[in-house]
Image (cartoon, one colour):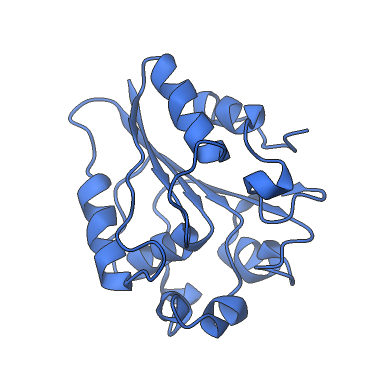
Length: 191
């Protein structure tokens, strides 16, 4: 059995209409263990508290694998953990719509997640796929530019997907579920 850890972003209170909420339900229905924690203080996150929560919820299960899906600010959380040697031992990781360092630094509540982040210090032990979209106001230059190319990630671009949130049409997202169950699957647009 695979355990899935789903990590939300800034100001996300895990609303039912979000693709992550939908995915958690679908995976549970298929008999998987799902960890979908509410990270501490989502409206004013403290990096140290989120790192501690990642460590707590990212413990490898006694049996089976661990697959991680991180959206938005949680991608930077994962990168910070990886740079500090604190990333959980995962079998695969999906990065979805990370905010750019300049945008993150411009928001006082989350600036610490990008301050001093050195991608050269990041050691990604598990295969990572990056899913990003054009028209993402939180990463206008493109996540491929900031993360995909520098880290040598496998990438899927979603045309017109914005920040890949419910407001952008991302509630049910079948290709993410397909990726969860098939490591070779590519992630496509929800529509």
